[in-house]
Image (cartoon, rainbow, N blue to C red):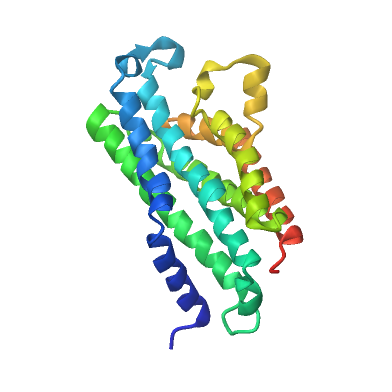
Length: 247
């Protein structure tokens, strides 16, 4: 017999696959952005300031982070706050399928979607533009898992502190722009130096960008960057647990 949790995860998966706009922003948009940037000649020129790498090489980990941002900040919180606002979570509290099953289902489907998007980005970057594969597989895996964990932590925290969908949209937009900036979507993190770079490196996506770039270049990520992501992950989930309300 299928457990209520497994049944709920299957339901959330089916519902998610019907959300074409969400699928576009998570699965297609990061790769499309990489392709658009890759056709610009300047992005395919090697630059000594970037460790003799090209801008397109730096944008592969950036677009990987972009898929995490779109999933965790722009698509997951509106769904969960909508469930709360319409009373779905409250009604589930009276059934064998606990509200936590929905939360688990949402986290899982978004994590799988992000992983699929990341594979597409890396493959397209390699095949179309010759971007190198991660030099440190173990380092890349460690950085990726922590980046995904902190991303989902941001999304869960936004959901927790937002009483309704409208408030959730405002909070999400407030987090979206700085997340895009620190992830290097607007400008590669490598172009910054000094105090600005130090401050960016203390943010979740700044540390994630540093770690993924180090691993991509063949070095194991700096422990400081991994610690920053780990610290933010713990903090965000503590906030989410304490602030989350099912109704």
